[in-house]
Length: 422
Image (cartoon, rainbow, N blue to C red; front, side, top):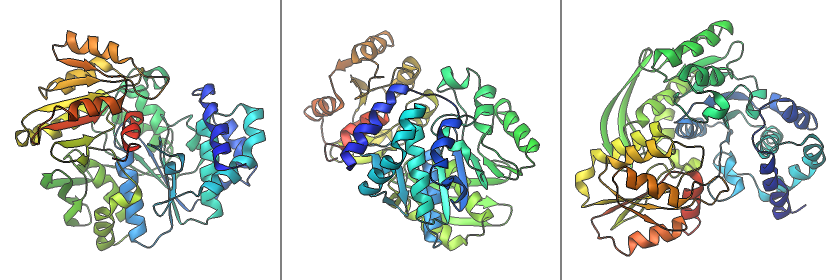
């Protein structure tokens, strides 16, 4: 099996959709000697928003500390191998083909999903490579997510907001309980969840598992020194020490909580302050992209994957903090059908922007025409283009050097733009 043949086998597994449950992925892993038990120190990350930045920060810190660090994230932006990395390097294409060949018959027999097969490939490679540390992002939720076959040394729950409500429940406590289910006996748990109704299920699960719980805002605090496009400088104070002058190549003060969580976990593992600082400065070497990432200048073009109201609120607040730099703002927006499009558009409306609505390259896309209707109902000017590429080209043909173009709403949309060479 070649790499392309492996992809041709894996991608159609999306037809099975999301099938919560752990038995199918356990069956796959048993074929490879249970690699989930050979992943070194294990950090498991769940949460509605912020998983990616915490995972990238921790991976970079562990690398700076000299550890062989595996990182499993989703979804990818352009190429499948982005999901599975060791020390920033993607899994080789021939290894994808190798593991896909190994698991193929069991995947077919058990009707495994795309994410289950991908998780098995990742765990097998990480174990075979003898990693020291593995950092895992959940795909969705936690309790029945395919990654939840591991016994985590550390659990991070970033934030809780309404997203994937058809699967996780329609209230914050229900969603929090689903995510808290990744806590295992003796795990050390770190969270930035502040709303009591969402924090309570996490506290309850931690107590049941005899898992110490550390809460950002109580057990650690941060102070923002400077928040400029492309760099966040802050101090993080824990019970043990103050980390001064931390510089992180991220845009947005909202990242302070995510960075602080990474610092809290890293400190707890015994990593030195100098290595924490060095790792944070090199965060982008992990492959982290498309979070208010500047991909063009004159006009400025920012690429972002915010796709729910809470995430978009943080994105908009960040842009408002340096709104005066730009004459006008235009937004290329595409969304998946399970997102609260009206609430997302209302958040973006605060930018006093014009919209170009596009279809994302996914069967789950909301049609650009539907988005346009919502924009018009909300009182915003809107233009429809078929694709993100066409939408960006349309705006670039009309933009001045002092304008800002934001491309946002979906990983699929971000991937489409990156694939053009941006």
